[in-house]
Amino acid sequence: MKIITSTAVPLPQENIDTDQIIPARFLKTTTREGFGENLFRDWRYDSEGNQKPDFVLNNPTYHGDILIAGRNFGCGSSREHATWALKDYGFNVIISSFFADIFKNNALNNLLLPVQVSDEELNEVFKIVNSDPKAELVVNLPNQTLQATNYQFQAWFNLDPYKKMCLMEGYDDVNYSLSKKDVIETFEANRNNDFHVKR
Image (cartoon, rainbow, N blue to C red):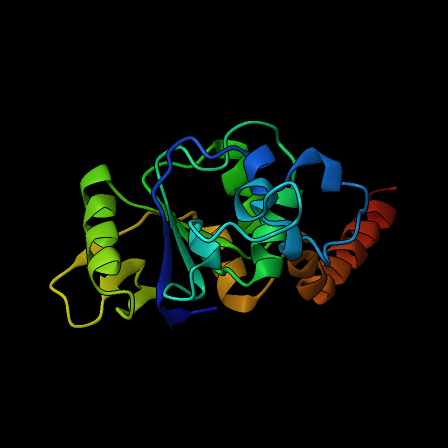
C-alpha cells in the first residue's frame, strides 16, 4: 500500500461503534474471512434479510476502496473483528475526523489505513463525494496526503513512522519481526558469545 486512488463511499453518521460495524452475534469465528458480508448488517438488511435501499452500501451509485465516516468512528468495544469486516468487504482506507484509539491501532495492525483529518476537511470531502460520486480520492501514504482528483483539495494526515513503514511493506507486527530474522539471530549469537567470554 503506497498510493490508493479510488472513488469513495460516504457514511456521515457520527459515533459509529464496533457493534454497528459488525454485530456481536457474528463473532463466532476467529478467522478473518467472511466478516465482510455482515458489515453494518443491521443497517444494510431488514429482519427478513432484505437489503435496505436507503443505506449507502446498497446504493450502486457509491463504491470504492475508501469509506468516509463521521467523527468518532470505531468507538465502543475493542473487538478487532470490526477491522476484519471492513477489510474483508473491500475497504483499504477509512477517512474520519476522529478515531477511537483501540480501533485505530487494530486498523493499522490489519493494514487498514485510518486517515484522520480536521472536521472542516472531512466536511469538504463529504461535499465533493456527495456532489460527484465518481470523484476519485488519492491517498498518498509516502507523503501522508489526501487529495481529490480535479478538485482544489488537499489535506495532510499524521501517522506513526513505524506503522507507516509496515503499511508500505504490507507487514503486521509479526511479519516485521520475521523480516528482521537475520538481524535478530546475529544479535543473539553475539550476545551468547559475549556471555561465554565473560564467564
